[in-house]
Image (cartoon, rainbow, N blue to C red):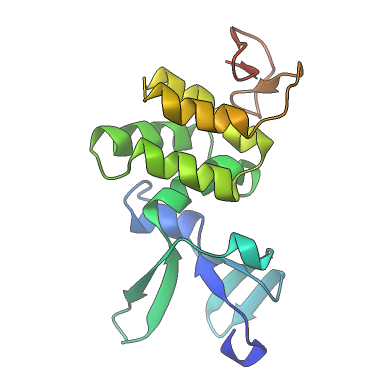
Amino acid sequence: MAEKEGRYQICGPNAFNRYGFDEQIPTRVYAYNNRLSGEHQIGTVALTLIKVADERLDDTEKVRMPNGQIAVYASRTRTLVDAVYDWSRFNGLPRGYEWIRRELKARRVTAAGLVKTALRYGDTGTIRRMGALLACEKVDDALLRRLERALKPTTSLIAWIPTRPKRGTVDRRWGVVR
C-alpha cells in the first residue's frame, strides 16, 4: 500500500477475531483501503481489498505484530459498526447485535461512541438498525435523537436481520421490522 501512496485498515473477520468477538481465525485478510479492490495473493497471504472513499478510512488502532511491523486495525467501535454496515460481506448480522450488547454491558465501548461512529461511517440502514438496537438497550434519549436527526422521513421498512423475511413486530420510530 505504501508504494501506491494508499491508506488501509484491517477490518471484518480479522478485526472480529482481534477483539474477541469471534473465535474463528480467518484465512484471508480483509482490508478497507483507498487504492485497490479485489482478491489478491501476496506470497501465502490471501487478501480481500475493499476500496472505499478516503473519508471512510479512519477510527483506527496501530498494533505491533510479532515480527515488529505495524498493522492498522479498525477500532473496536468502528468494527462493531462495520458488522452492521457491511453485514452482507462479513456475515455480521445478527451476531453483531449481540457483540454490541455485550461490549456496552462490559463498558468496553460507549453508546455515545457508537452513535458518533454510526453517524460518520454508516448509511441509512446502519443508522436505523443502530437506533433500534440502542433504543432496546435503553441508552440516553439525546443520543437516539442525534441518530433520528440524521434520517430523512420515510415510511419504508427494513428488516432487522436483512437475510430474513420482513415479518414481525414493527418499530415505527426506526422503521425496522424485527
